[in-house]
Length: 158
Image 1 (cartoon, one colour):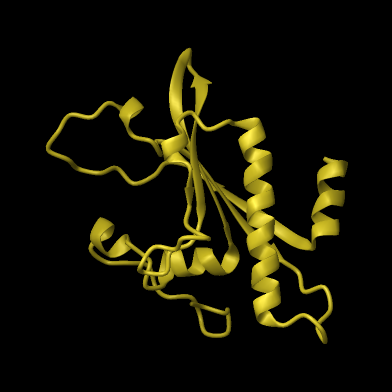
Image 2: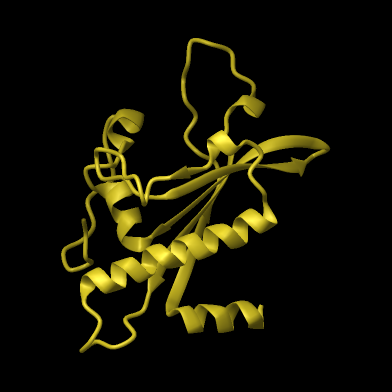
């Protein structure tokens, strides 16, 4: 862990959060097995870089460094959990979706309870996360019918 903290400090990552847990259950007309749902088990890592020099580093530079940190973290996670299917590796940072969604995704396989399960990994910056969860890229409106409140004023919402 000490090596990881040193790398984070050198890269300028002030903190990183991981979000894992059950994803929303989708109602479908077909009978899917949990093994067929690629994000039944998932990990999301959200990165926020600290500004190295407030006078010299502007917002675009900070965002570019955060994107580079996302790629670095994805590489580390891919070494731990290699992609199980190359077609399930997605780079929405270099190729954002039309609605502005940005993130890095890959699907790996993990063994739990004596079975092999698909395991989705997502890496994004805090700004990308806010846009995905609360901005135009949010998709909670069709999942829940009524979404969460937008970020509070002054929190740097999308």
